[in-house]
Image 1 (spheres, each protein chain N blue to C red):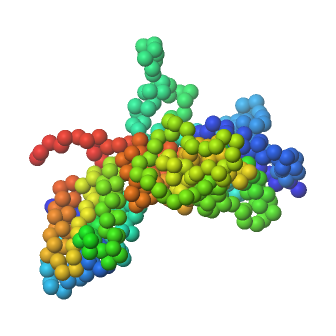
Image 2 (tube, rainbow over the protein chains, first blue to last red):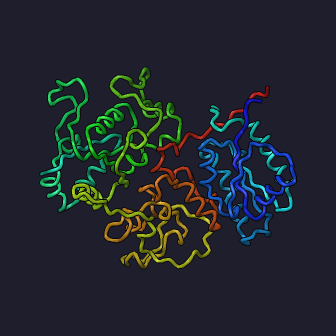
Image 3 (cartoon, rainbow over the protein chains, first blue to last red):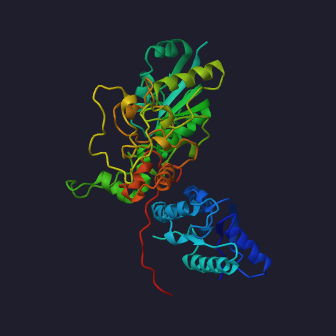
Length: 136
Length: 314
């Protein structure tokens, strides 16, 4: 049980970040492995954010935004969705496992969903191992 | 008094040196009055180990301005580069190989052992031939750009670099001011007609010609991205424009991205894919997208693809 992964979670200000806030206020337990970075919208997640995080030692990257059609900026999360398919493929190009990326929709009143997503991701990354683990 | 200059080439094709010679009329005062070239293996006779080979250690004379071209590929390159750094006050990395790895860094995208096998043995090689290890300097673990190995004072990318800016850099150094170099993308210097994104949802391969009126000037041709071709203009640094039009575009060919990313540390592959995806263009229609890093494979950007290995369950 030595490996404690570092996971960067990019949360949109209006939904996922509020959900994380609520999870804290409600004293819900979730793994400490996740580090939250607030974005105004999941649609502003440039693939470079993901690659930068991984190349600087993060073991996994999550993007959390509002449910589809509930974006504060109308179509920001559709953009995030378009990009996420691409990010998954690009991860392989850069030599990372595609499982290290995750996109989840969480509304501001769903702290339980936030906790679930974060917990599942942590379990998944723990199975994968550290990011720089050289595999043949 | 003339300023001393040393030129050196590492893993390169000599195209950058030809670009220096291609400065044109300005070259004459540059090499006769402004500069006093003390060392340039490709252009003049000055040897590493003394003129008759009497020296023991590699030696490059002291110079104020040092210009290196090419990537750092093997131990010899590294030794020469480090000697240049100690002997030159200002070191300029000239050309995309020196600044971003360039074409030689394409090798970073595949297994090095396999590449070396492929270089030294072919189907018709006689049996018993081995990869030489005496005459050929041993390779480094991958291909590096110059600034990964030593401190570089000025970067001037391009494949080949624009002679106009080579002259500008040298003159600005001698005059003691900052050089005036382009800092935007190729699109900012492009004259083609932009009419809006239109209905493009896939990128075409450049196996058929773009649409244009033969003989008509460039500003009457439609933007090649809008025509659906994979033009790297948006993610590539400007600087290739001669006579007002980017080099490849003036030949009615999409930009290949040879000047590297617009921002220092940028990633052309990520930026291009991001641009395509956020404009609703199917990124899967890009054939061999890793080759977008064809000029910028150093700095650890291009790596061999991991082979999937079935792991034993413990």
